[in-house]
Amino acid sequence: MLESDPETRGVLVNFNIHFQSTSKHRLFAKEIATVLESQIKTSGLLPDIDLKTLVIQEREHTVKPPGVLRKPEEKPRLRVDLLGARQCVPLEAGYCSQLPYNVTTLPNILGHTHNHQVLHTISTIKTIVDSGCYPLSYELLCQFVQPICYKERIVPPCQAFCQEFLDSCGDKLPSNIGDHLDCNILPNEADGPGACISKPGCVDNLRNSGKAERVCDGVVDCPDFSDELYCPYCPEKHFHCGVGKDCIPKKKMCDGEQDCSNGADEKGCVSLSPRISAGNYIHHYHNAGYVLFQQRGEAGKICAESLNGTDPELAETTLRNIGDSVCQALEYSSLEGIAVGRDEEREDIQYIDIADLQRGEFITTECPTKTVVRLECQGLQCGRRALQYRNTSDPVMHGDWPWQVSLVREGVHVCDGTLVSDQWVMSTASCFQGQNKAKWLAALGSVRLSSRAPWEQARRIVGMVKSGVEGTDIVLLKLDSPIIFSDFARPICIPQTDDWVGEVGTQCFSLGWDNKQDILRPINLEKVDLRNCEDKSEVSVNSLCTESTAECTADVVAGAGLVCQSGGEWHLVGVSSWRRGCGQLGGGRPRLYDKVSPAAEWATKVINKINVQPINPNVPRRRLGLGYQ
Image (cartoon, rainbow, N blue to C red; front, top):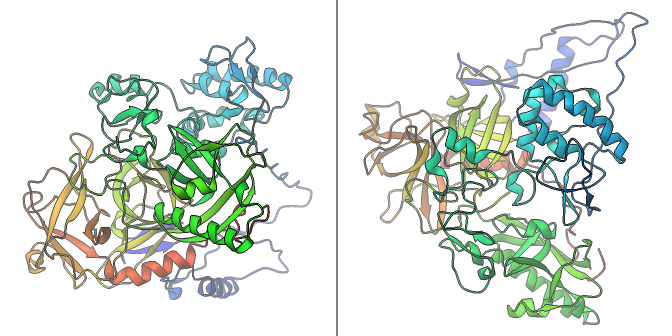
């Protein structure tokens, strides 16, 4: 557990350690300290900790009297397969038949395999609904016992919908539901359209809260797209480009002509995905999986059957060339592995021949053996975004600054940060001073704090490492799980030097929140002499002074990044330590940032040393042969 130390402005790391010992073999504080110091040194997980400050304090030592039974071990929860093919059956009339669907499946999300289990649980659901602990208990719980089944797939409630219910009713759930209800196994809206069922009523909530103007305004505010669906500019069976009021007929996707202003209709025409259903969501970046193609709004796979009987060396060269081309097109730095194997999905899938892919032609063909191509890329290029030319969209639109992170403490937005890898965010230590073990979340993809777009992602902050660079408060925040990269969530580059900042043609921005309108705005900044900040702020040799080039329209909060473009890539040049206005018109002083470049080597070591990536079991790490994998 992390806790700020107001006296030293440092960070306290609290360890909670449990031992099984007896009065004859009791451990003492000195022994524990020796073992703990050794483990900290060898693990490298806390490179900047001062071991001289390690204090061991025994909080409680109790021995259970003879005859006291131990608490039985908790049974592991049943893991239900939410991805495999299902048999859809009609939903029988009954208590849960009032929802807007009439097809369901078993096993359900609670693991029930027979109708008598469902009927027994429904009597419990009635009691929970009648308690009034959550206004949408009926809608959620009925989807758990009689879930939606669509195209032989289960469509569960979304994770956020489930968690909101648990926060309200968790202490009222009997064991036959509470012991089997695990929100963490559920998908969320960021997994793509149709991945799960969102909490209903988003549009009504916008209207009832005085924000009716946000419906059909071109900015997605609801996780299920409902505020921008069936609008005059986007009729049914159209593709929303994800930004503004761009909406096109699905048949225009991947037709060789750009119809969306951000080019979304021609992105993902060749992509990677772990399964065909996920491949239909072109905004996502998967670094491993099947090689997919898009044609008129439908995804398909690459058939490698024509390689059978080909000279092995020629076939391997063909595969490597395709792999290199795909990884490069997807903005990854290298090909990690490629293989040919049998298609494991049972869906009715369209295929194109591997030779047609090389020629850039998408001509569907039969693939009797279902022999398909899978590959893995590594190293998504940093500092890139889907729409490179739109630097100053005001207010900010989704995808403009995909590395922007909002830091939320106990449900309240407090600070900002910047995504530097899939599991690390750079921010400032000042955000965490005096917080006394608060719970923090990192939210990506947000441009309106009171809304939640379908591509927004949230992760718990589970660790913090502070830079040892003199005169800076820069920290790296560890997320509990990796971010799914997309057009709306990508890492920025960490510069080794910032000498180029201030040169002619360099553009630098920070992002601020307009609290009156609850929107994110860009702030154009210029580097100025450090002396401009000396009489207004506490500066150091590792400080960077800037001034706004326009009237202040939003406040930049602590932890916000100063980002500058160089060579087509965006770099995190500075981190704000405190909340201030944007330039001399806002707060009466220039903006001061901690330089990132002096901490670049440290940051790279922390990310690479602690961020150990598991081996992907589905894609070979080295093999480039034609054997079935």
